[in-house]
Image (cartoon, rainbow, N blue to C red):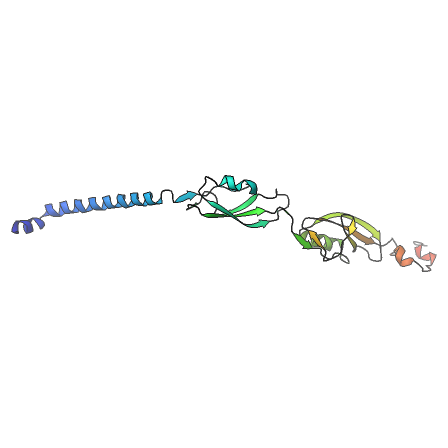
Amino acid sequence: MKDLLAFIKTKQFFTHFGIALASLVIVLFFLLKYLSSYTDHGEFVEVPDFNEKRITELGSFVKDKGVNYLIIDSIYAPGETPGIVIKQDPSAKSKVKHNRNIYLYVTSMVAPQIEMPKLTDRSERQAKLIITSYGLKVGSVTTKNADCNGCVIEQIFEGKPIVAGQLIKKGSKISLVVGVRDAHGYSPDSLAGQTVDPNTFNDGE
């Protein structure tokens, strides 16, 4: 017993003890790392890139990817092909758990309907700004003799007048009819039934 106690106090004992302790720590480190990689194996997958995939092909696309998908919103995007993925969450190449839902945003198959704004009695410039702010398109602009000069007197959709508040598809083209006066500030309607002094139309005479 005395010999054992004497050995414990020697430098040789502490050297061997230190080596054994260090070896144990190293073994435990690699063992834990191995166990971690083993338990995570098959649990995490890489998120595929859904960008520009059509809705009709999503089922077959995710079949062997280890994830599920969920369409959470449709967005009207003029100029884009309807029914394709334009955004996803989480992003492509992210690491997620097996069978995780990937949230998708797709382009709308049908343009949403909005209420037609009131454009009449506004200037041509104001009317055009309103049209674009509502997600509509500016069509042709024609002029017509009227009491007002430069103001919109008619708003036209597909060749027919359209009233404010009527439902219309976003992205539709709206044409404008802008009122103009003649060179003397009169419109034919304003002169109807009135007697006008001919001298009024003599420029400089």
